[in-house]
Image (cartoon, rainbow, N blue to C red; front, side, top):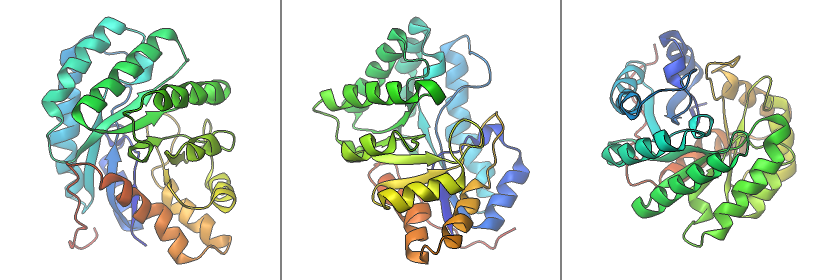
Amino acid sequence: MRYIDPHIHMISRITDDYVRMARAGCVAVSEPAFWAGFDRGSAEAFRDYFRHLTDFEPKRAAQFGIHHMCWLCINAKEAENVSLSREVIAVIPDFLEKPGVLGIGEIGLNKNTRNEVTIFEEQVELAMKTDELILVHTPHLEDKYKGTRMILDILKSDRRVKPHRVLIDHVEEHTIKPALDAGFWAGMTLYPTTKCTPERATDMIERFGIDRIMANSAGDWGVSDPMNVPDLIRAMRSRGLGETTVQRVVYENPLKFFLQSRNFNFEPSSEPRP
């Protein structure tokens, strides 16, 4: 079965991961901008990072028949530095018309601080001015519910924000319903320690259905596995969920959401698998 990983940080993955993903049926990925494993010191460092996302990484992925798309932002973990964040936000429009740039993300909250909220709101403002999709990072573990509620309240208070153009990512059992009830898309991140397993994601699919739900592996610097979406496919099948349901979650739903971006440029590859 072909699938899309709608949130994976390939800059932190070796090329062999592309090989494994392609063999498992991956045809496309989207890579949100995120933390580099350390706090960057200048807007020019982010400019180089955005060049990597928009130029180099699509070429690396294409060698294995995988289409690479991306999102641009300064992430919540680095948003404590407000002055640097504003310099980075000023750089982002230079890249928004690049092919495959889907929108602004992953923006959101990390520790739910005032500075993080300020930069989140300013990046939402950029997305509204440039008519971009938004991908939202929700906090980890004990801060997740509070941070998710803060994010949803901020977005719902801005009448320009159209919920069907926003993906609330890293949802878990206690945050998926508020996101869906507000009309947003929900992303389940299959991450072994701080988010959810394929089995828990399958539980949520059985409970909440498949409308506006997708799943991703994150695949970043931490303990993570870029093969977690195929693991979810197996988990769903083991529960007796039909192929139509599985295909909706791992392929059709990401496509439906991404198609709203003016820079969406994905066409399934006809090249043979490696």
